[in-house]
View 1 (spheres, rainbow, N blue to C red):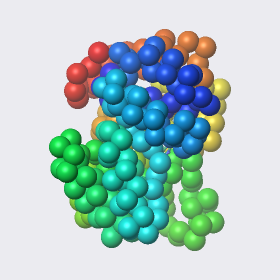
View 2 (cartoon, rainbow, N blue to C red):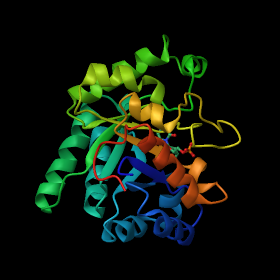
View 3 (tube, rainbow, N blue to C red):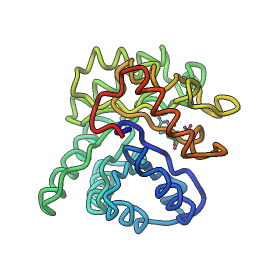
Length: 247
Ligand code: C5P
């Protein structure tokens, strides 16, 4: 399923490659996060990109604009298909990220990666947000940050499926909405793990998600391939997996 991005949150490159090989035709792409990038480094990104996999490099850059711009340029050169930054880094940081991706891609004659902004982590609820000094509801904070990301010219945001319908309405049909926090409805784990604001895969697509990021419900399942197929079948069965080339 073109919209299913599988988080390769495993300890070693060998395990991640084995997972990618077994899931390639069910997945729309693979997400490389902090753990795998820290253990395996940029070569692992190059390896998947060379296999023509769409790589979402989930390093959530959040620093001063110049530092983020140079990191985004480096990620673009690696062949990442999607890169993210924290919207809380502010407008000029996001603009610097956008410009770096476009300029690097143009100089290297490659497609620019999608640059999306994390709004509020799906592991946070209102009480946790208040502990960080952010007053008001989670939804208000997500909308504020999404509008800032759109003003900066980013391609979209990462947000929980619970905010997706409102984001789609506010930010329009072309804004990319990436939703982790997928649980239930075929994406089973024993509980929610550390995710707070969750939803099932078909419902998240129905709410307007462009891409689902799914980790543990697939990679920790006894049969990862069957888990991924069940999620794809659930979305297809709902008649909503319509973007791109579904497999
Ligand atoms: O295992 P699970 O399905 O919860 O994995 C979700 C993945 O999405 C993890 O790799 C996590 O780092 C990532 N993510 C998230 N919430 C965000 C951004 C990324 O859960 N806001």
